[in-house]
Image 1: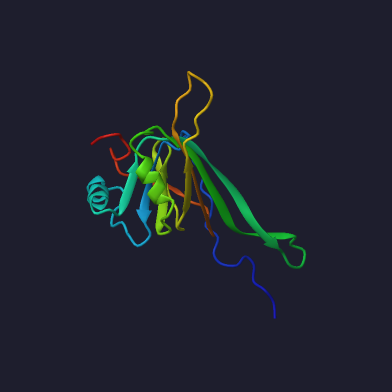
Image 2: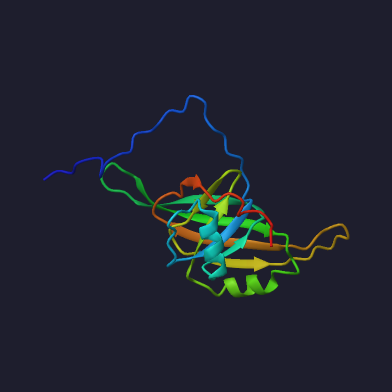
Length: 174
């Protein structure tokens, strides 16, 4: 008996002669019900319909970042450790302080939503459901502003890959 390595097909890397750069920052987020399936994730009309039906809750303008940590288990033989998953933490700020108190209080109780976050031109969609906390810290500073500081966590086996998103959705419109 012997083990065949690698375990499964390896997708070959690609070379991009003139790489496209992607600007950072979590610029917007959307909570998507875990049982909702997109037909076309780039279709703005589908997003609007899903929002009206309560399948997506969108905060179009945020700021923040994503921290990703590999989850490792002990390896076997000469392999010291194996990466089995990734822990994600999205820490950000929602500027709609007075309007979104009820939203943040209710979404923390939900355990049936995945998260989408937007960078400059791409969206990133979790495969796993998330947990959310938010606080509205008030600083002892007359020139400071009060915001909702949110923290979203999830863990999943594979890294989240960037993809094209819907045009015009992550904009603050009524």
